[in-house]
Image (cartoon, rainbow, N blue to C red; front, side):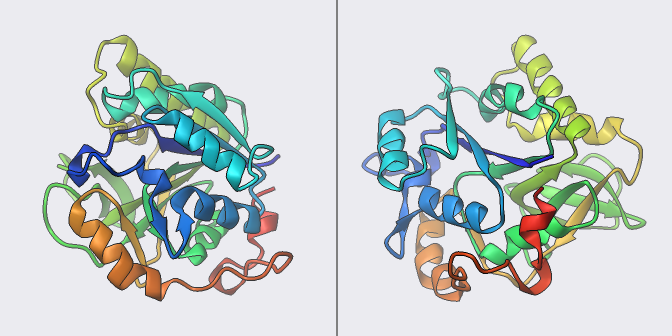
Length: 267
């Protein structure tokens, strides 16, 4: 059974406050677009297929897929309502998430160290969220809330009691049945007209319905990453994150370090 990756890349990136910028997944760092980096890392880790949700400036993304030679790896899903909430884009991934395969969910606007992906693919829990504990307080971070070593809530403004929290990095590996439940939760929300929601609401719906401990976290604190949401994130990506990224090993090398054997884990 092979894992599939699903990436959301349909939004306008309004919070960057610069209408001249391309879709965030086409932002370039060190001469590579984020999409090119995602493809290279996923190939290295043995993930054979990507389902990519597009919307804003979709044609530019199609051209980039062709430029980097990833047409055989990527299936695109067009979201005509890309100006609505991101839960509509998640709903577009529904058919891919319900296929019965393990599913790797990814935000498309994250610049990150490839060792994070190896760690996530190798983590023992079937359903696992990547987490960073070195974060700042505030309402913007999506919080993975832990109580008695169990993940109990997942939200920007958690409602359940917890002992501590870490920031979600934007990547989650789902067991096949959990992926299908998330797809159904998104479909229900959209069918109810709740199209303005962030997609994390569908994740939380399933988390709260599953037995305690079914979903877990993989702590990758210390590895560099940034989600590109605000102008200051662009500056941080160039100044701090990009220089700290470990080079991706040459083609054919096994993903090593803490994520050794990631290609096998992705099967």
